[in-house]
Structures are given as C-alpha cells and as structure tokens.
Length: 141
Image (cartoon, rainbow, N blue to C red; front, top):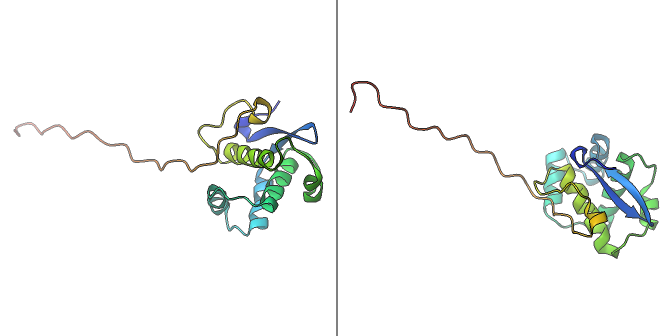
C-alpha cells in the first residue's frame, strides 16, 4: 500500500500496479534532465501545467525508480496505461501533487479510484500573524 505522506502514488502500467515516488535522488535526476538549478525552479516549471510527452516519460521513469523499480525511460515509453495520453497526464499530475505538497491530494489514489488527480499548484505565501493593537498606557485616554 502506498503512503501519500511520503510522496508515493500507485499507477497501473501495462496492467500491473507500480509504486512511484519522487525521492530526493529522483528529484535530482529531474533537475539535471530539465536543466533546473534547484527544486524551486523545477516546481515552477511543473506549475506551468504544460508537460510534453518526453517530460512525462522522464517524470514517470524517475518516479518508478524512486519507487524501487529498475526501469529505463525506454521501458516506460513502451508501457501502456488506461486512458492513453490522458492517463499518463493523470499519473504525472498526481505524482507532482503529492511530491510538491498540493493541499488537496487525497489519501486514495485517483489511479485506482477513477477520479482525476489534482493539478499541482503553489502553496499560498504565509503572512505574518497580525497583532492586536496594544492597550493604552495607564494615564492615557
């Protein structure tokens, strides 16, 4: 069973369930593959929502290796998924959502539930807590 809190998802490729996870090593692999200087730049690239087929191959292959499967990009390119191109996009979106902490990533895998994965989105910036006004000093009106 996958642990979404650790960034794991389950996806069915070639009719077989696989665990995918973008581990730190997998993220470093993707930084190198996409020429991103750091993880924030990598996340910003994915937030644009435009994923090429080659991008999907790299992300899924890295996720499979992070999940403990010794598969190459070529291996992944030969695999089939339900839903065709949209199925690959759902896998990528779900993997990115759990990796980069989308707030609405559910505990149940959309790959097995039939629901679409949420698109990755940036977390809102945290604002400094507002302070209540200071009480007036004694003797001041």
